[in-house]
Image 1 (cartoon, rainbow, N blue to C red):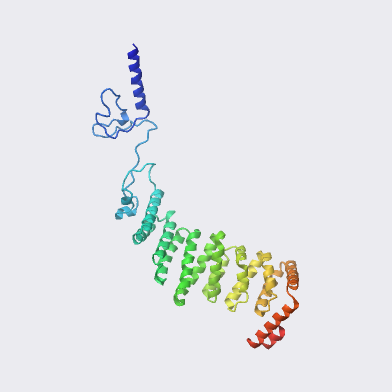
Image 2 (cartoon, helix red, strand yellow; image 1 turned 60 degrees about the horizontal axis):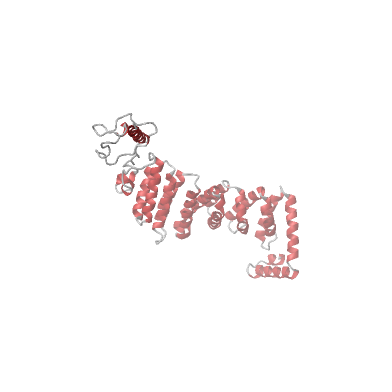
Length: 378
């Protein structure tokens, strides 16, 4: 009776183990279900045609890992793409591969192809991926931006040309269209346009000035934390090409799109051009300073007060004009700033230094500018 009880317990243990967690059989045949062992449960027993019987999977049992479709992206259909590089329709675990996963895999594969040195092929396939596979998805802007960077990097050892600049800007323009609020896309667009303006001959560079100005205004509006360098590049374009009517119009339109407090970062550079010889630049600068002074008078009042005491008549006149606009709403602030500026100058500059500076200015006006009245006024 003891031997019979032990045999019954062993049989119950084997059946319980099989039904709890059946290991999948990789070999099959009689060796897996030989004599003296319990037969596998129904959901592991194949029918006569080799298929599993339907409706036999117990609750909680996961099916085998899904297979990656052969057409994971357009590259595999072209041959030798991601499908070939990663094993075609090799089984992948973790659930069904959706569109975002396919795009991420394709994008990563193309970056590896670029890193391995197949640059021309990587550019061609990335263009196909961005134009067809990733169109309308979150990967579109990233793919177009990467494509523009690769197209620029391919010819780094060659002189910058109009054709190459147009090719790169076409890709980056698609990136801005796919993601209009992407700082990286607009910054890349503006930088390539700025590079074209700096490196191309003036006759060829003229067409890239307005795109660069617009791109910098857009990137400044979207990336406030990184606005300083873009603002300085924008001022370079503005002060160099501001005599053109289309550039002036682009600057005026862009000033309406960004916050006035951003200009406080470059106040010294702007006030330095307050008496610019070009009337278009001077008018735009004075208009911008008046606008900033209305919202942030405390940020401009002291440098404008200092500029209003300049020995250069155009600079002094321009500064006084802006201060007159500020005085309309902040008269007390202007008076106090003028008092502080006057006292600081009186304490820091000796009389003989003031006399020497006046003599130098009078000499310059008489001998260089032939301005007798200016010499006497100085």
